[in-house]
Image 1: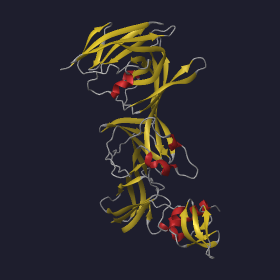
Image 2: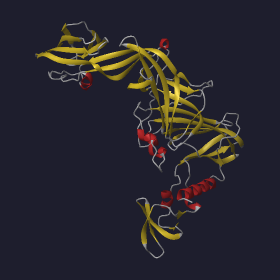
Image 3: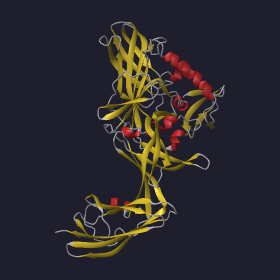
Image 4: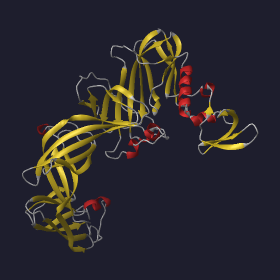
Length: 515
C-alpha cells in the first residue's frame, strides 16, 4: 500500500473517531426537496485578467489551496439540511465547507425551532491531515520508519533527519515508509470543518440552515459576437451571444445548487490583514420558475441573475452557462477614428502646456470600432454585466468563422450604446503635422494639418477625425478648412467621407489665451 493510501485510510478512521459523540450534519435522504445548497457569487474580476495558471493543475497539488485566495471574487453559501439534535446541549459539525471560508460570517439556524435552539459557541477547524504536519507533532520522538524504530530529529528539504538505535544520524529523502498510529492525528481533520456547541429545547429532527461567505470563487461574462458586413463598408449586423464563466477554487464543490450572480460594484470593507473579511450584501431568496436560463432583475442598485435550474459547481473547475439567448441581426455600425494625439492626451493634466513639441511624432493609426445599441428594438435591452467581447466574421470562401478582434466592456445598462475596439485599420491611414506655432505673454497660436487617406480599391469609408485641444482650457478656433463639431470642452471632430484612393486634408488654427 502506498504512503498516500495509508495516510488516506488513517485520516478516514480518525475522522470517524473524532465525530463520535456529536451530531454530524448530512443531507436528508428524503426531505421533500427542501434540503439543498444555494450559491450567490460576487465578482471583482477584471474581464480577461484571470491568471491562466488558475486553470492548470500541478501534479500532487490542490489547485484550491494554490489559488483560492487569489481568485477575485467571493460567494455567499446557504446550505439547508435535516439533522437529528439531542435535547439539551450537543455538538454539530459540518465537514464539507469551503476551505477559504470567512469564519466571522458563519450563521447557524434551526428552521424547525428557531426560538428554542441557541448557539453557544462556533468554530472552524482547518488543521488538515498532512504528512509533514503529522511528523511535526512527533519531532524528538520515536517513529516507525520502514519497520525500524528511529528518533525524528528534524524535517528539512522534503525529508527527515533521523537517528537509529545505534546512535547513527542520517537523512531520509521524502516521507514514505512512516507508520502512524491513530492517536497522533486526533486533533486534525480531513476536511475543513465547522462546529457548533448549541442548546436545543426540543430534540429530534430539525431542518437547519448554515450560511457563510467564502473566497476562491468568481464569475464574469464572456460575449461571442458574429459580424456580418452590410451593403456598405460602414454598417452590418451582429449576432450577440453571451456566457457566464464561473471559476471555483474555494475548496468545496456545490452540487445541484441554486445559483445566483450579482452584477455591480458591491462595496466591501477593505481587509486590515492578509485574510480578507467578507462583508457584502446578502441576496434575498426569491421564488423563481424552473426555466432553462437566467432570469434578471434589479436588486438594490445592482442586478441579480438567477438560474432557473439547479447546477453543480465543482471545486477546482470552470463552468460556462448561457447568460441569455443569442440576439440575431442586431444593427451595428463600423466606426473608424483617427485621433492624432491618441493615448498621449491622458498623461497631460489641466495645466498650461507651452512646449511646442508636445503632441508631435504620433502614430498614423486609424482605430476601428464596432458600435451597437443595447435596446429592445434590436433584440437586446437587458443589463449587460462587465465582460470580454470576442468578435468573429464568416469567411464566405469556406464558411468558417475567423476572429477579428476583442475588447472588454464595463457593466452596461439597457438602452445604452456598446462600443467595441477592434484594432487598427490596414488600408486607412492618418497623418498629423504641426504647421505653425507661436506664443506670447498670455497666448498661444497653433496651426495643425491632419491628413487621412483611404487606400481601399473599391470601398468608400467614413472616418471620424478627432483633435484634442490640450494646451489650455480657454481656446478659440480662428480658422478651419472644414466645419467641425465640438464634443466637449477640449475636443473637436470632423466626419469625413473618403472615396477609394482619396485623401482629405483638414487644417485649423487654434488660439489659446489666459490672464
